[in-house]
Length: 104
Image (cartoon, rainbow, N blue to C red; front, top):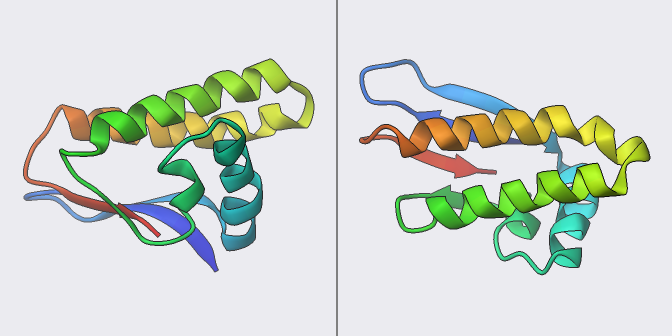
């Protein structure tokens, strides 16, 4: 199984953005999120709705994750394209309305 960011755009086709395998989302990404004492990232392997009430917090958490990946370096840098892809999608959500999105 895999974890994705699923976005239902108004007047457009739904978008499914790959995030990680279930194990990687739970252990690697979730572990990193726990290390950083984040609220949302450790839960991405479960169902996490994204809405206007938590979007800014999720965006900030993903930016923190990205910063930590760069700080750790080495193999952690392999996760940067995924972090950037998710950050870009979340930023796109900030600029529009009428969407429905979730991790899971």
